[in-house]
Length: 183
Ligand code: IMP
Ligand code: MG
Image (cartoon, rainbow, N blue to C red; front, top):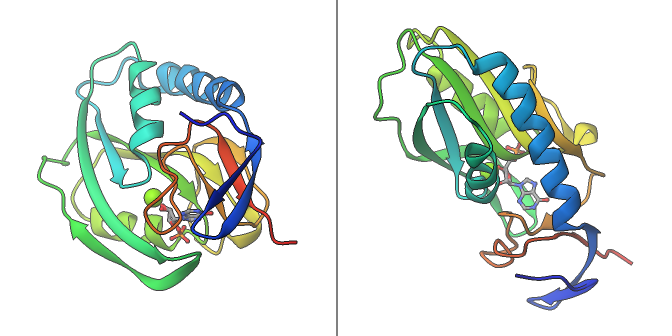
């Protein structure tokens, strides 16, 4: 629960970029789009990418009025405020993917390397369709070679915390989104 204009975290100052109400509006908009596309698909599977996507996934999934399974996959790609080159897979898929419509739920697609690693991993497993929902993108930093189907908000190419996103493990529980003050 954080509704401050500014937060200090491990010696860095972050300014509020979006309030929880603004974030909520984006989630509801995406939920409507996903419902229109997925509402009649049999047995869809949502893949939530841990850790960061847990907040977005919790809000998004509860705004979906149709039945679907949920599975958690874990990758680690950030150390501090800089991305590492190759995302590491820490927790793999256990559910059947063949002939299923997959909805990947991600907090933020930055360079796109994490998502690319997951897509490579899913490739050849026989999914019927794969759609990507991300709460945030940083389109200036994107170097991936895939299409994102549902986007909450496009952000400036700056480090953010809150709404599931962390700085060295902290800040995930902030309900607003904060951007690093680089002045
Ligand atoms: P990518 O592989 O560069 O697309 O990075 C994606 C992952 O890095 C996301 O799933 C986040 O967990 C993390 N990440 C990217 N940008 C930020 C940020 O601004 N703050 C915190 N984590 C971030
Ligand atoms: Mg993530």
